[in-house]
Image 1 (cartoon, rainbow, N blue to C red):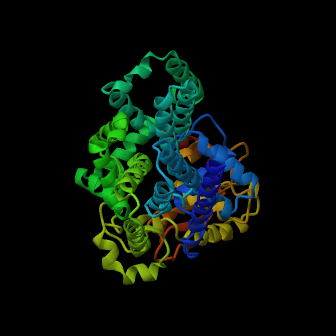
Image 2: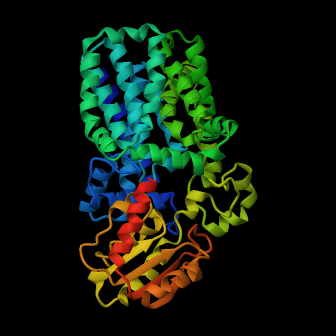
Image 3: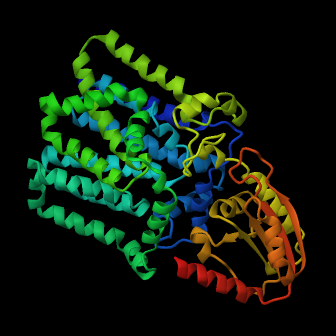
Amino acid sequence: MKEQKRTSFEMIFLVGFILLKFILSYILVNDIYELHRDEFLHLDQANHLAAGFTSVPPLTSLFSLIIKFLGNGIFWVRFFPALFGVLTMVFCWLIVGKLHGNLYSKCLVAVAFICSVFIRLNILYQPNSFDVLAWTAVFYFGISYFENLQSNYIYCLAISIALGFLNKYNILFLVMGLLPAILITPRRAIFRDRHFYYATLLAVVMISPNVIWQFNNDFPVIHHMKELAETQLVNVKHIDFFKDQMLSFISDIFILLAAFLGFVIYKPFKKHLWVFLSYFITLIIFSYFNAKAYYALGLYPILLAFGSVYITELIKNRHAFFIGLMVFIIGSFVYILPLVMPVYSPNKIVKEHKRFERVGALRWEDGKNHDLPQDYADMQGWVELAKITDSAYAQVKDKSAVVVRADNYGQTGAINYYSKYKDINAVSYNADYLYWFKMDKPIKDLILIVESGTANKELEKAEPFFEKARLIGEVKNRWARERGASVILFEEAKIDLNSRLESEIEERKNDH
C-alpha cells in the first residue's frame, strides 16, 4: 500500500511536468514568428508519400500525414515536436528510476530537461526532436537489458534504432559510438545472445524499404551530405563544436559535471561505463566530421539522468542544497531564455544586439553575424511571400496551365502552406520538389519566385519566351532571410514550356 501511494504521488509530479512542458512549447514563441523554412518541406511530404526523400528518411512524412488529417494548423505542427520532447523527458524519468533515483532525482531531471536547449528544439517540426527521443530510448532499453538480461529489451532497442534511422540517419553515429563502447566493457556479452542477432535482423527488415529506395535512386543521401559539407559544415570549427556542447546546457552544468564525476567515482555507475564511453566516442566521431553541435544533442538526456541521480546522492537530505540547485537551474535558464527561445520581437533583439552577439547567437551558417539568429530570420516573411504569389496566381486565367516555381524549398513549402489556393502546387529545383513537378497538361504561364536582386535579370532572360512578363512584388520584411525575394508573372509562352522545364529538371537530376 505504501509503495502504491508513493507511485501515485510520483505520477502526479510527472503529469505536472508533462503539462508544463507542453504549455511552454506554445507560450514561449512570440506570435510575430511564422513557421520555420524546414517545417514547410516536411509538411509538404505528406502529399508525396514515399519510402524515402532526398532530404530526410520517410518517418516524418507519416507524422505530416497525421497533421494534415488533423487540419494542418500551427497548433498540431507544434504539438508533435512538443510530444516527442515530452516522451524524451518521460524516458529520462524512467532511466532515473532504473538507476534507483528517488523523487528528488526525478524532479531534478525533469527540470533540467525543460531548462535546456531541448525546449527550443521541441518547438520546431523537424526530425531533430524525434532523433533525440530515439537516442534516449536506445539508452533506456540498453540499461534495462543489461539490468536483467530480458530479451524483450533488445528488440525494443533495435526498434528504437530502426525508427531513429527512418527518422534521421544521424542515429548511425550513435551506433558507431555504442558498438566499440560495449565491446571494450564486460557488456560485450550481449554479442553472445542470439536475440541480439534476431533483433538486428528485425531492425534491418524495418529499414530495408528506405535502404532499397536509396539504392534505386543512387543514394541521394550521399549527395545531400556532400552538399551540406561544402555549404554549411565547412564553417564549423572543432573548438566551436565542443564549446557549444556546454553552452547548450549552461543551466545544467552542475548536473553534467555530476554525471562525469559519478561515472568516475560512484560505484553503482561502474556497470554503466558503456554509456560514458559511448558519449565520448560519438563526440569524437562527430568532431572528426565537422558536425554541427546540435547533431550530438541525443547524448545529453541520458547524462542528465545520471547526473540527477548522483547529485541527489551527494546532497542526500540537505534540502537547502537541493532548493539552491533548483533555483540556479531555473534562474539561470530564465536569464538566458531570450537567447534560447523566440520570445523577443526582432526589434527587441536588435536593441539587445550585443547580448546575442556575445554568445554567437547571431552567427549564421555563412560564418557572418546578422541582425537576428538564423532560425528566427527563417521564421519571417513567408505569409507576405504567399500573399504576393496569390496575387500573381489570381491573375492567371487558366490555372490548370500554370506552374509556380520558387527558388528554394523554403519559399516553395511556405507558398503551399500559406496560400489561400489549395491547388497552387508550387515546386522548385531544390530538395524533393525537383521530383514533384506535374506537367501532364500543356503549360502556358509561369509564376517565378527568385532571390533578392535577380528580378531584372530573370525578366530580361525569360521575357523573349513569353508574350507578357511583369514583376508582381517582392518581400519587404526587413527581418526575413528571404527579404527581397521577388514574384514574377510570365504569361502566354511562345515556346514549348513543358519541354523546357523537363530538360532543366533532368539537368538538375543529373547534377544530383
